[in-house]
Length: 309
Image 1 (cartoon, rainbow, N blue to C red):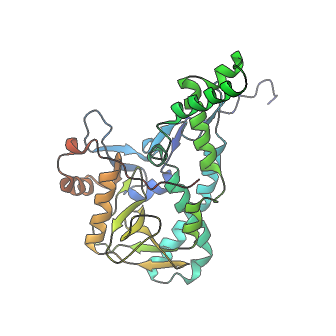
Image 2: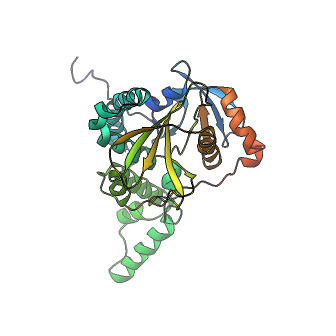
Image 3: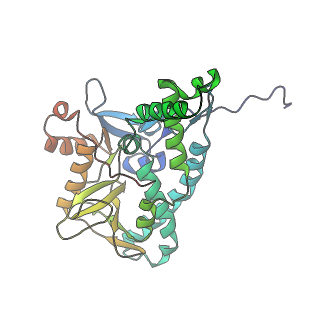
């Protein structure tokens, strides 16, 4: 095919903030997920293909002044997911046998996956300090610069003034932060922790997944530096497996969970997240039943620890 006839490479518009390789582990058939979203006009449990779940338009795209979008970060995440997925498979399989010695070399991969899954969701970034005030902050900085130096040119005004400019710059700032190497304070603390694979038995009720899938669960006597004292940090990675962060230790471990702990993780996700998913309608009905009326909970406050950039 000649260059004149070559079609331009399509730019992916729909970006999964919880990747399909994770969502697939919360299905019974590898394709269909049961969802409940507080953002729906009439919130109700519904079936969804994983391709259509936990996605946002151009969530990882950088935007040029002319509106053109680049998706380098989305492509990088796709490549990383190709590494994270087999690593999680190996770790879950090893944890099911009770022996993690053969998968200790995957520890850094697991830490990287956990870190990026925590920071890549819209809810996490929308709760960062300064997110909602970005436009006002930008306006203040521009005014200070103009007062100190000179008026803006027409081109500079188009690039720096107005809601569209603020939204573009905020989006690009977030994308740059998400794509930066693991050098933040959060990443450093995680790198000094142990990650346990918590495996459920067949007769236990399964985990759910949420739009902010990393959550904290109160556990007396377990202080943790990344969250409030007396809380553990959890990330369900499959219906019957979750990562739990253990401070002041290193490596990969294996653990079990009581029914009460599983319920606490699921309840925390249902409270904190706009959208939750599970392998079956019955699982979601059980969780939502403890939350009371879904309509009364449709404006639940999101809880996200502040990230140091």
